[in-house]
Image (cartoon, rainbow, N blue to C red; front, side):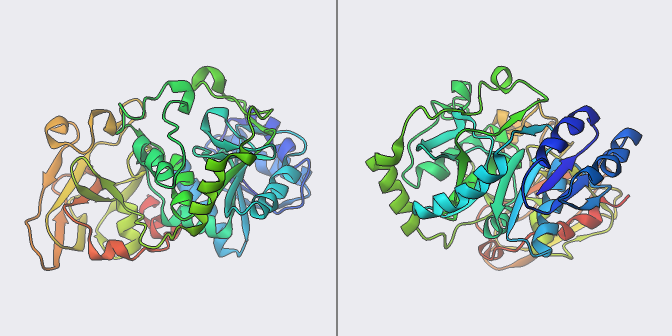
Length: 410
């Protein structure tokens, strides 16, 4: 279990004891605090937990960098079951046994369990039995992955939009859940290009590989930094309100999911509106380690990437093989209230002056080395878009934190 913290000392003082109150697991504390009180807390509270094996300090760069670092470290250390818990999530007694039992229960029911959460939100429930629920929006606040699922999450790590999440499930034969998600606050068919953070893609990435995310019944986790009922209209399920164990549609879906082949599933983004294939900077860095030369700095960009690469000077350069036309998506770092996709991303006419997309390549059926030389210090490279799927996009790469760690160095 990996416990992620960044200051908010009062939350940590409440949630850490609850996490360590039960369970036979290795507890790794990863802290990115900037205050003296925050930095002091792991050494102060850590010895109270028998499970604590390691403390990692200086885990900075934003929440997605922390997640990528945590999963990369745990995989490299050889763990077969990897959990993430954030310090705003309060666990209740019984969580550990419920989570671990559910992994086995799901397998007995013919499901390939990729992840389990003790925080089963009602409005993010796809199916429900008396023993568990199947989810489509679990997030990273409290989740436990199998090793193969953690590898899938890293391999597929990127932001998404509501429609891709919805279509990922509906394409497997799951019911259309656009009318229930977040208490109907998000009309997915109308706002289909609204961008989401990377952890919203976790369950969708797993389902594309034939793996499911199950939630415990009842739930054993609550967010304590915000009232999620007020904020998003969701509540942690405590009592099942239906039972799909005998639902023929549920069993048909399970059979179709088991028989489906994940071969050919792309980890790259595809924009159906503009017919563009999208590669984000961290994906390019993983596929082509020497693609970025000169001085680049990685900056968290919650709903785009989620890692933008900022040019520290005009020596910053990008080079990679390209077939066909290529466009660069450049601009300032996004802020949460100003989501790219609110305007229909990517659309040059809309973003001109705010989120410009620059045509920088010409059509060619032969591979060519495309080179971009940054013209202005501080320019943020958000994504690279192509008019066709590149040959190298058909060869998924195992993304790890090491592929972007050098871009966080000051």
